[in-house]
Image 1: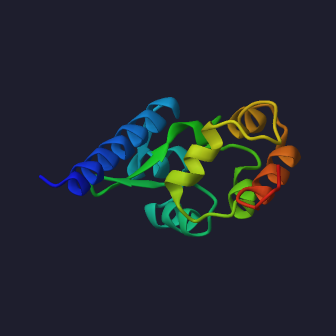
Image 2 (image 1 turned 90 degrees about the vertical axis):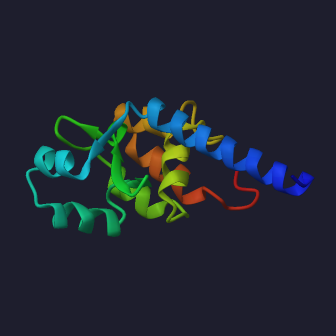
Length: 135
């Protein structure tokens, strides 16, 4: 095996471990069926919310999964939709990672801020995500 191929395989392995870690840190996942029942809407309506960046859905082994951390009291976290729409990425794995990670503009994680009702500060941080020199 070439050195380049070995480095590539190790990078893939680290990425898969990071995904697994993020899903665990997110409190696990719900299936599409479970989210449909939780929200009391059709599966198509849930998929529409995903396409409109109102919910985070990740694809894992050909299954659409929804990180549990984005829900509270049988509904999406208040402000989540606004945060996702301001966040400068369409990649759901990046969205989830950002929610779970610290942000230099916040004294805690964006998820903690949303859970504590600090929506406007979280939106402001999301708006600056990925902006060079924004911290």
